[in-house]
Image 1 (cartoon, helix red, strand yellow):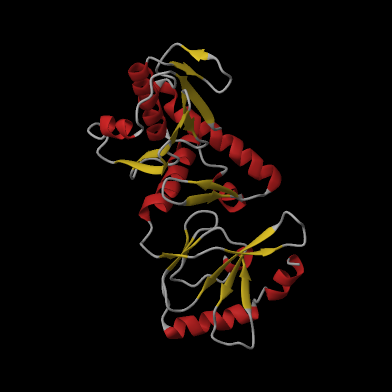
Image 2: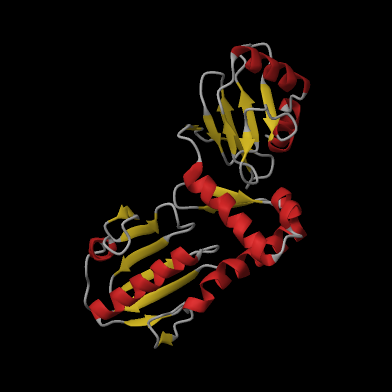
Length: 278
């Protein structure tokens, strides 16, 4: 699970100095500046969840996220050590206990954190059947019931290898396709937002985080919507689902698109959507 470490100190350094200090050790280090006091670090091509470093008045907060892999945790350790030594600050865990050993996460335990988190997530999915979204370094990835059923009987070693390979592919291995903009509709329940994505025949797409996909068929006579569950059954051969729900949708030829539209008309979920929406 996520852990927030803190370093309490009166000596403040710029977060940019962290990047400058580690870029030689980690040539693939990337930094995303949320604002001048909040920077997200990750190792491009290797990290899964990255490390957030926040400067908050007289302390630094360093956040290690659920499903952090060994590269995330190595970076977490290095940043903690650098900040504590540079600022002469004390390191605290998320229960406000002082940590006397700067190597907060032992080298032998680096793989255990991902393993422990995955076991907890699989147990939750087994009991609820829900799909979980995890913000990754470059985009979100999703784990749910289909993945649980596909991999639950794998050996522990094979499970860890396969899941990390899937996640890293979603983060770094997908083609540079257009990423659908989100739309939303209010559900009948006050706290329910129905997530929609819209696609047409003229683009390659990465489709994520949707309840329904709206298919633009250039026919005002019928609104076509396909649910997340139904799209798995009618997926065109050129399209791939690369985690629980993320679709890599290669542009179809006109003939392929017309065939897809015909299939969507036979499996239209618009009435289902109307039942869910206000």
